[in-house]
Image (cartoon, rainbow, N blue to C red; front, side, top):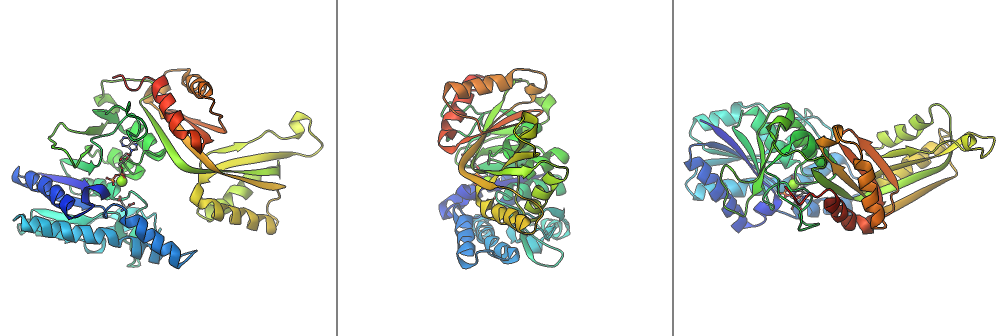
Length: 418
Ligand code: ADP
Ligand code: ASP
Ligand code: MG
């Protein structure tokens, strides 16, 4: 039997009516002759609520119990989806992560797949089951504890199942009808793309476009999964949505193909740190150990080099997610108290956002940075930190200008035009 993976995100299973709507889409594929593995998210808002309950109960919570709680949202929708399909006379069964089993590392709240043995699900398909409904976002560690894959992780569950079961395609059903040049919530000039290259989607996702979890794109690229994003609220067929595919399957070639943003960033500056070998390691080592995801890093030139005085001192600036600021501050203060680093001040700005332009065309075109900076200057948006790689340029700016910056960049690079 040919097999499809169909993933339904939170808004697509937000209530019983929507679960029924999703189930109809699944039934249609079964009628077309497919076996289907359905991956479900929790009902929209549910995971946030569960995370909130954990945080209210325990400030520096035990990550194993965090996972035990937040994984539960997907258990509910998996069971309900299987029941709804059965009501439609589609033979279906639900599977929680441990039942498959979805073996993961024990990095709680950020676990990675180790293996997905097929035997249990294959046996049920052989017995006549048409649909396996699998709870997304979760797995089991070798210690036998429930794990989760990080926010948005159901996308990654879907791609991993598509790879493990050799699915013809992995369809990600969501509340937008495809991948756009930027988040369609920010500008109505955003244009839907028919196709996007893995590399570009990988950058967009890692720079904040939450339409796909970064890791899902990585896996799809590595295992050559045909990955598609489409609407669960519209009638769809084989040509709907956006296909994420290899660069050489794409006709369109723009220098910049998308704009991404990450709203909840923070900028921290260590003022007057010694400029000597090992100082970066003394700062970023403890941050890594504390689980802080440091993103952009800037080190100023030494004061001595600009004739500022006899001592080699510099400022070190970095960014991280705003909800990790408390952890970052504690790690730095501990490192200072233990005598590993010294600094005069720690300046924290929690009101910043990151805006990025992405495009594989940047590899061969110069001048993208200049155009980007001039567009921002034109809107009077001050740039606080700049970061670049082969196919992206990112800037940290005041959060209140984030929408404006996205719109200005979308206009400057004429992304509304095909
Ligand atoms: P789901 O619950 O289905 O997983 P998400 O909320 O995680 O859905 O992802 C879909 C959302 O991603 C859209 O509603 C949209 O606001 C946002 N988004 C951000 N960037 C993009 C983009 N470039 N194209 C499409 N959607 C995007
Ligand atoms: N429910 C989880 C979350 O909200 C996983 C997912 O929906 O992909 O992050
Ligand atoms: Mg999602």
